[in-house]
Length: 544
Image (cartoon, rainbow, N blue to C red; front, side, top):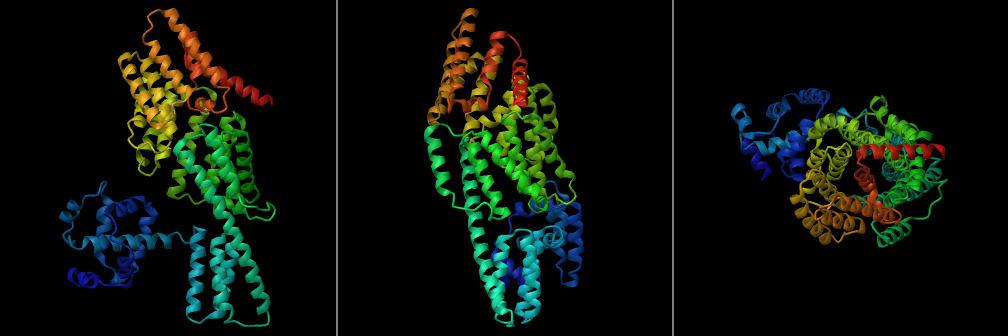
């Protein structure tokens, strides 16, 4: 069928296109458009050089298609066909697939010297090619080179593949040291297999814990705590910390960080986040080899330092994170830039929270909002929700309730609430208080009812939420100012008692309701109250 189609539309048949069409259905237009738009100027230039090397064999039509798409801000196939008469509508599906494949090949070739994993894969491919040509001695030399690189970079999965290839070639190169080499291969295979098994267990466990957190937020009750603790302890294999590799330790410590953050034990979370950074400090070359994990390690340490009010340490760690942009040894891909954007801006916002400086914090939102609109399609839903909530809290703390509502509405209007149910819940509570502050009494009354229904439906009506909803409901019926003040004082007492509860206190991580109540009782800006408290906490931490 493909052969007949190629003859009909007069597209040159080559093995690459035939193979690609048999292993992948026609590339979706969105995939091709996004890939072209993700290319840097250098990568586009390299692609043109790469296809020019194909000479007369090259199908010039896919280059015409590339140029046409590259010029568009939004993909419009009708305009392309109107402008480029050389393109036949019937050819487009195959042309898109062919172009997509050539772009990927060009990217792989262009990045072969900068990404260690691609260089290592090339060495493995060269070894296989030499083996297939019966050039066994040359193959062994290439295998040794690949093995040294895999060991240096602590690439266990690649190392196992190299060892399997070495097993094939060893019988073809018999010599005096053959038995010793066989024993070494067997020992190395056992060791590497065990290492890969540990990495899989640790990384799977960390992924599962992160998945729980992404869905629910922090543990909500004793049942949650018992469940996740049992799951964590049962999942951990036995290990000797002195014998396991860098990668095993990396994922092991990441597991502990995820676990302790999830159960709100930020002191132990801080301990293991520090261990993560120490790993990279002991082997600094791994920062360039594993930059995404290094960014995540810094992000974890910053999160712990923020929760524990370690401002001096937090400031230094944030400088380390920002310095990655200037690190020449680290190749900043689009993915790494995205990770840096998320981490830097989230912690810039957190820094303003720690200092109680909400008004100055809102000044960074202008730049953040502009960047956010540009990359929102690349961000995961969890990160987007987190940005929206933190920005809303900045505006709430600065007393700008109307703008806070704008950002909160982005969360509450979201139909899909499978992610971060906690943020959806607290966004509704904060929205209610914003409407109350703005004097929208009619909206508050109806919103209380809908919020009740939301919590009951989710089975997530905590005492914290119930107290606030009841308070607002009764407050609307009060007419005397003295009784209003009593209501605020009563709720403050209830909240202070809840803050002592191991599980109810999680709510105060999302919104400092007590400071807001004090601001209403004392008739002072909420920012002034929070700033006094944060300065006291910061001084207390410094004295410890």
